[in-house]
Picture 1 (cartoon, rainbow, N blue to C red):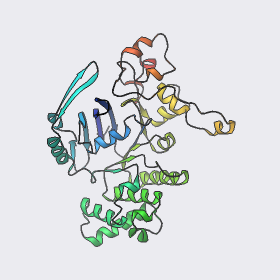
Picture 2: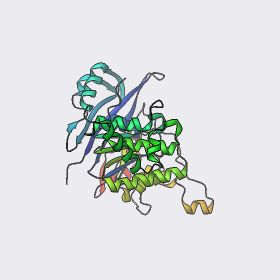
Picture 3: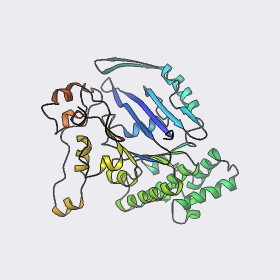
Picture 4: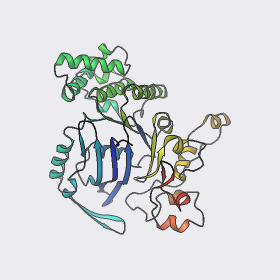
Length: 365
C-alpha cells in the first residue's frame, strides 16, 4: 500500500467553556487516514467534532487551549511533515477521573510555531471550503481579485495577467455561468450557489494535494445542493484530488466518499469502506450508524407517509465524558451480556471485517 496523504493519530482538541468553568473535549482521540486520490467522508450529528477536526488539520485553532496532542502526518510530493510537530512543548494538561482539570498553554509560542509549520501548507498543499461561502469571501474585493491573489500566492503564475487567466479558467471549471462577468462581481452580487462555486474555484486554483470540504452544501436549497454535489463528484474524477468531506448529510457522503468515518462525542465510532458503513443491506453496523441511517427519509417512507425515526436522548456532554461507551445512554441495542462493559469500559476500534473498524462491545466483545 502507498503511504496515505494524510494520517491523523490520536488527535485531541480541547476548549475551555467559561460559562461552565470546564474543558470541552471537542475532539478526543480521533485517528483516520486519507489516501492518494481518495475521498474520505466524515459524518455525524452537530457537535460530534467533525468541523473541529478539520480546523485542527488546518492549524486554525490557536487561542485558548486549542489542539493539545496527537499527530497529523501530511505526505505530499513537495512537503512531508507532522503538522503538530513540537507543539506539545507549549502545553501542559492535568486530568483527574477522566476529566480535564487544567490546561496550561503558551499561546504566543504555540501560535508562532504553528504558523511556521503551516507556512508552506495552508492554502497551497491543503485547501479548505468552509460552511458559509458568502461569509468566507471578502465582501469588499471582487471574486476574481480574490482568486487571482490565491493563484499568485500559491502557484508559479506570478504575473497579474497570467493569474487572471488562471482564475477565469477555474471559474470555468466549476461551471459558473458567465465566468468573465462573474470575475468582476462582488460576493453580494452573487447567489449562495455561485459563491460556493467561487470558493471551490479559489480552493482548487492553488492546485492543492488535499481538499477539505466542510459542509459544502449547508445553507443552499435542494436544487443547488444537488448541483454542488454533482460538481464535486465531477471534479473528483477529473482532478483526482484527495478530499476530506465533512457533512451531516448522509446522502452526500454516500455519493462522494470512498471511505467513511462516523463520529460521535468527539470520537470515531465506525470507520471503513462507504459501502460497508453506509450500505443498507450490511448487517454489521455500529448502533449509532444504524440510528443515523434509520433517520434518513427514504422514498418508501415518503410514499407510506411514515414517521421518521429519531435517536432518543441527548447528544453527549463532552465535558463529563463517561468511562464506558459514549453512546451507551442512547443505545437501544445493549444486551444483558454486555451491559456492564458498555457502562464502564470505553471500547477500542477493532476490525469487524477487512478494512472495517468499529468501537462497540456488541460486535467486538
